[in-house]
Length: 340
Image (tube, rainbow, N blue to C red; front, side, top):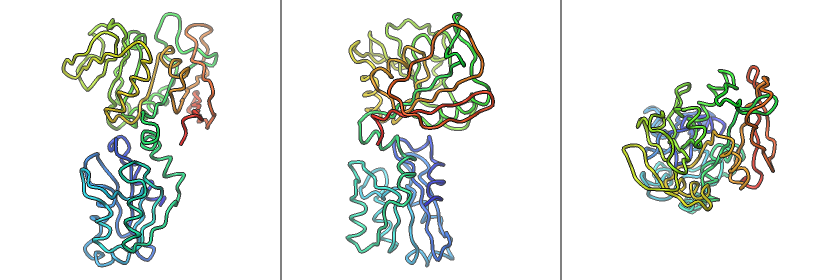
């Protein structure tokens, strides 16, 4: 099952809104096949696993045990049901990491296999399997994206100087942040951050897929010369004034009441499973104040500014862990009210 998790992780950033899934086929303690869900709309992990079995080992499939990190699907979607494939190959034992709580599955895959005489063992490394797909399960349970807040602050808790843009995190942290971006469906900044920093919001320092860019520009005041308007990829601009689409830039009008909840609902409707909010302070604090967040990742530098824009104040947070990255320390917090 640990190997299933390793394989599943290779699909990070590529399979959303589907979950990441890995699978291995074992005969006499020897892996004869393995695979994972590689891209949304393409073959599932079980299909790739069975397809990988060498011709000389094909006769062993029916005698082997199939391990899969998530309950096999039992419905026709973009691909056929994986339960049918398992039964077709007469696999008699299946070991599952965790149940798929989505409305389309929710135990039906397990029930179908057991009804057909397949031995099913559940909940092997269940905690790890749930953690791997926390975004997918959160969306299924709460009906809104998994929201991660991220900011960098100095040792004296400032995120910028009085003059505007300030470099705080070190180059190693910058690369890690870009990898975080590659793992999420969308990335968001507010008006002031877009104006002062002119960010690209891509993953140029890491490998992976660029997230959908999101900007909150209430009164459409941002200049079109900013990099966010370069038409390089889909960008959603939430505002209070108009709906329109210009190439890859989509303007989406929302009301002034409950605007952040409206944005979250809109992303859910678009099947964008996760959102990384990178600033500024006002936007981050707004998410915190209404409790609309799941994780907070704070990069704390050892430098001092002695004044400027104060960092957000994280309320009702549960400390998770910390990681040292050269002269930066990354602090990870969870919102206990939104955990599975």
